[in-house]
Image 1 (cartoon, rainbow, N blue to C red):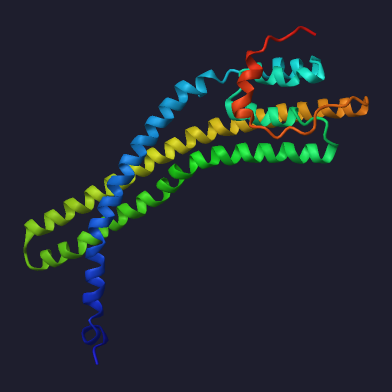
Image 2: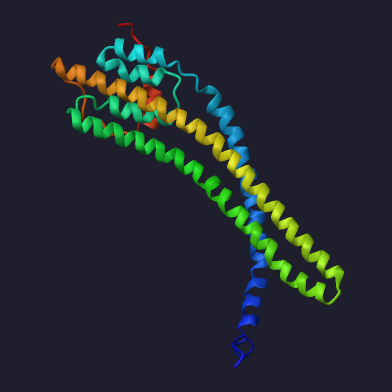
Length: 242
């Protein structure tokens, strides 16, 4: 008994493989459009966010240490930090009256939430950089089957068409992966710097709260607002000299 011929396994597998060619090509085209869109997002992010990130770390650390406790939030908001950094720091600075362990836990949560936000930006390009070469390989191998059959029949025209499709799929998949990988590397460098800065300043705020706690100073500890929306109002208030 010939298992392959009697059960039509070869025909079934061939039909499935050839049926996947069009969806594979469509997905590759969609990925190309996606990476071009993400490339535009990176350029926009550079001009709207990255080039404005010029925080002088010694300056803001000294300002936090020198500021009155109730003015720490104003120092943070007035700095040249990014929106999500300010949101995390304001949440902690407005809860500096918490006991040491809860405040430290809150600081960790805010750092982790900010890190998750940036990781979500990297997710698409990370995925595309991994699946685009695989899809390119699928787009290469699928048309090679009919091309080999055509070679056996001496049909060089069909063979050349199959090879053209295969090479196009390979090139498009690799280009997609390269662009996505470059975007991920650029963004990951930016975001690692953002998180490191956030962690450093967050440590200063937590230490400031510890000093106040030892001095018996009562600070706010029930803030649960949305600092992303509210810190602009704080920023617009005139800062008083201390």
